[in-house]
Each structure stands twice: as structure tokens, then as C-alpha cells.
Length: 372
Image (cartoon, rainbow, N blue to C red; front, side):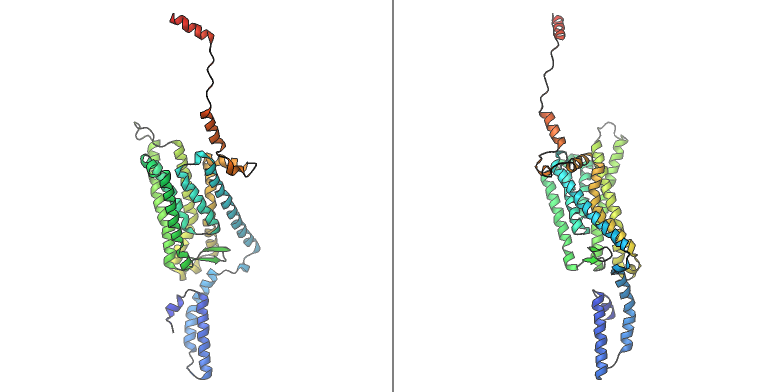
């Protein structure tokens, strides 16, 4: 017989129940044939010690969908569909806007496009590892504002592509353990496949630390440094020097800061629940209300469609490009137009020659008289 602690820590409740059923059947068979002693007391003791805990875990992890009212199921399904549609359309707008508008084609927006692709993946494969892509965008803003003299050398076009490729490789490597741990499972509470916090406590802690705590710490440091510099410039601490931050840089910084704050707010509840479950699953899981987990999951899932909305609300170039894309008469124009209207107007103004100045005869006569 296996030790009780080992049996209680088995990977699944169903396997352990099957083990108890087979064990009881073996005892009953031996008793009927007279080949062995009957051990009802031992079996009852094991069952009484383990059944309550297994029952609590099963009730917490496997919710009966029929117990929910129909209107609750309809609301949850509508939220999932709405989030997926907004996620796909919004992030496609971000990607197309950057490729169409020359004003948006810079090394910083390479990270914006990378994050938009990551949000598109989240719509179909809900994984928390894409926070590293968001963190690299915030670090880029930090270097642009606080280390402006070395920014062009550090974030050249080639180096930026290498940084993005490296982050994607690290993200894929971080996802690979899911296939061995089996942490992506269908959860009936949210009607979708999601990260199972009960599969491995050590892996759950690693996900929370790497996905949430480390990015929050790094990005918080970057934004504190940026805020200090912004306050110094606005108060004109060094009045003899020219301002190091342009108003457009401040607006871009505020946009990225709002993206970071929304990420922290949306992902904090689910990560804190996962950390608590990993520390003591047998006690924490039965005490977590179902509505709390559902709300925290939808908050994290909804974050993937917020970035495109924030860009449109706080960035004029993105907002104008959104309008041009939406109001286009033919979808083909999205891909064949070389530049957006703003970039075309700017190029035509530069290439257009100024007309000759009209000659005023009175002025010419006056000039001659003065010379004489």
C-alpha cells in the first residue's frame, strides 16, 4: 500500500478514487474467497480522511454549468465574444496604422507592433507570458527619455529588430514547459482553456514571479526615473539648459504609462490568487469564491484589447489613422497605399516650389532714387 501522503498528492482526483475503488474490491474479493483478512476499518479510515478534501477540490475546480442561470451563461459568453472581436480588430488597426503612416514608423513603435501581435495571440491562446513584451516597450521609453543621447545608437533599426526577436524567443521558451506540465486545461468556470494554477505549485510560483512581479518591478523603476525627470523639467530646475523633453515625448510617455497601469490592474487579481493557491492549495482553493476567480480571469483576458483603445484615445497619429482606415471605401487601399494622407501632404509641401514674388514698380523706383 502506498503512503497516505503520496496518495493524497496524486495528480488527479479521479485516479485516486479509482485506486480506492479497486482496493476495496480487492479486499471484498479476498474476504469472499477466504484468502485474506477483511480490513473495513482501515479502508474507512483512509476514505474518511481523504474524501472531504477531494470533494472540496472537485467542487471548487469543476463547477456544474447547469447550476448557473441561463442569463449568467449568456453574459459570460457575450463578454468572451466581445473581447475576442475587439482584441482582433483593435490590434489589427494598430498594426496596419504603423505600416501605413510614416509618422508612426519609428523604432519605438516596433515594440508597439510586437505587443499588438502578442495580444492577437492571447485572443486564441490565453497565456500570461506576453507581459515581457510589454515590459520591453516600457524600457524603450525609459531609454528614449532618460538616455536620449545614446538612444539612437542603442535602439537603431537593426538593434531594435534583434531585441524584439530575442524577446519572442524567450517568450516561446517560457511557454514550452506548459506542454510538459499540462497547465493549459479547460476550465468550466470560464468556458475556455486557461492556465491551471493547481497542476504544479512550483511552476505556478515561477509563472507569477516571472510574468508579473519581475515586470512590475522593472517597469516601476523605469517610470519612477521618468517621472523624476519630467518634474525636474517642468519646474525648470536647470534653467540654464534647454529642455530635454519635448511635449510630444511627454504625451507618448503618458500613453505608455496608462498601458502599464491597466496591465497591473487587470492582471493583479489573477496572479495574487495563483500565488495563494500555489502556497496552500488544499486550504485556499475551497475558500476562493467562484465569482472572484471569474472576474479576475475576465479582467486579465480583457487587458489584451485595451491597448489599441488607449492608443486611439491618447495618441493623435493613431487616432487619425484609425479614422482613415475605418472610412476607407475599398479594403484594397489598406495595403496598396504607400503613405497616409498626412505623410503625403508633408512630402508635397516639401517638394512644391514657392511662387516668385510679385514685383512692385513703386518699390523699384524708390530703390533707384535712394541709390542715386
